[in-house]
Amino acid sequence: MQENLAALQRTFGPASVSLIKVNSSNGEREGQGAPGPDFFKRWMAPCVAGGGAGEPDARPAPPPQGLGACLSASDLQSAAACLRHMVTQMLLPRLEERVAKLNAAVTAARRGLRNRITRLWKGVAEDVGVDK
Image 1 (spheres, helix red, strand yellow):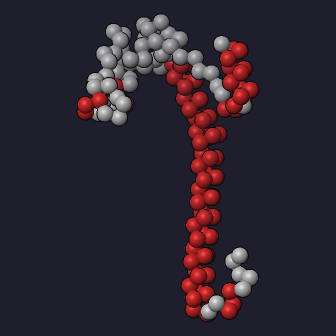
Image 2 (cartoon, rainbow, N blue to C red):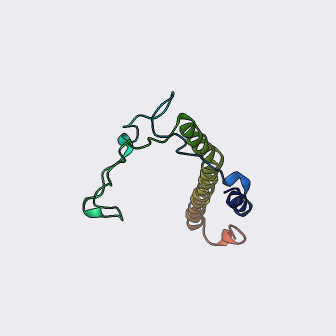
Image 3 (spheres, rainbow, N blue to C red):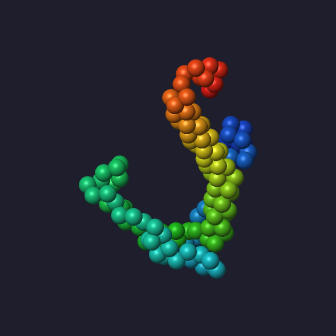
């Protein structure tokens, strides 16, 4: 497993690859912070009628111990830390870059539209060397 992790880190960069250990519990739901048997039910949306959008017609039956029975509190904490890292270090900076590019494009388009109207009003004679 460590070889695979090292190969992924070489390919995508160490900041983009992380390993999360899950299902480290034995399924007995002991200890503080372990999820209850209905922990994941509130986030489970019903399937699309007729199995559309590549979904099955119905969800498979949950395991006898319940969904997330083998998750421990440390599993949930490590998943939360990984998600937090992904959002703050990867997703938000990319979104900020895209919003800045969009803002620059909108600003340039507004400026271009204003200049076009001004050119129509003042005439083509002043257009030489402007906005090229």
